[in-house]
Image (cartoon, rainbow, N blue to C red; front, side, top):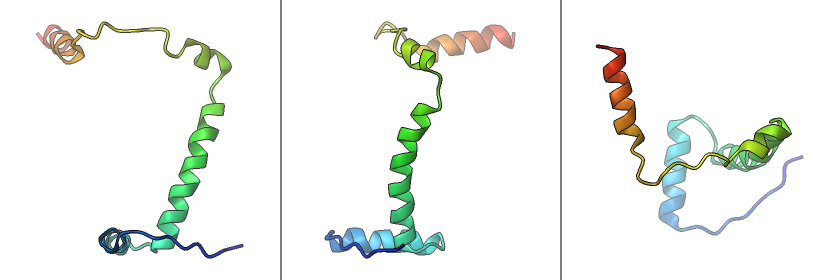
Length: 81
């Protein structure tokens, strides 16, 4: 069942959103609906992981000074010598 929703936004933002939707061949209503649906999916996606994953998440803390780009560069240099 569809219901009407009224939003008050800056006119420039509305115009920009309408142009964005038009370029992608989708209605602004559908775009907003998909956005709200995606908010719920993020919560659902979290439940799909095993509990062990959540227990282990955040266990590894890297040194704030660690430069992963530099380290990865060294790895690639060794790999392709």
